[in-house]
Image (cartoon, rainbow, N blue to C red; front, top):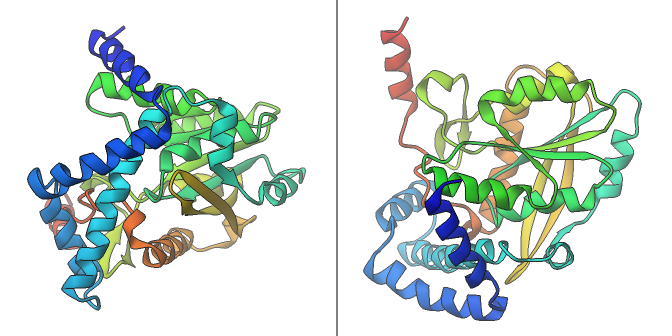
Length: 302
């Protein structure tokens, strides 16, 4: 086992034993050096907020920026707390409101899979606790391997502690086809608002005032296995508490033209972000590869 992983895990586990109210005090303290001294990716955040919300004044965007950094510090502390949080406490803090409706859809004989469209919105790590709510189903999430092996092991541990399976993106189709042979119903989350590499870009859609490329694997695989498709609309109820509502997109993905479901997902995610923009991951360089760059790359590789 990675030595750095053991050291990090021991430190974070001990820190996580603090009551969340004290961790939030650390969050409040962390905000000032992160925002005013280190200025962690502030230029990236300012640029993206200006491009996404040109209708807002500079003062309004600065208010969103400050709210985002306050939330980001809270997110860090909430993730740390996950190293020792109980299943019962997690279920109290992460609520899934209409699971019965999803269950009813999956009880159909022709439905084995339910795919969930997610974004880096609110505390997306808490969504992994969904498996605690569906012990009779196989829960999982698609993930990108983190470059640092120690941090990769840490996040795999966090995401798997409630029973969900982390499926490496490159293995997604193979694993889902394997799961199709089993008896259990399957619910899998796709965090699809990440930036694809140039060779993985296939479609562009309008999102937050930008031409934007999304991963289309959720749509393609949903059509292949006839999965019910939902958007998970997450809200921050108050500090430390979240509510997720499943919004049915379709039970019949094959009825939609290529990319229509991906476009729909982009619209739903944008609705969530515009409702409370401070809760999206603005430090992520979402548009560092443009459509123009992709077209040039595509032409040079034709």
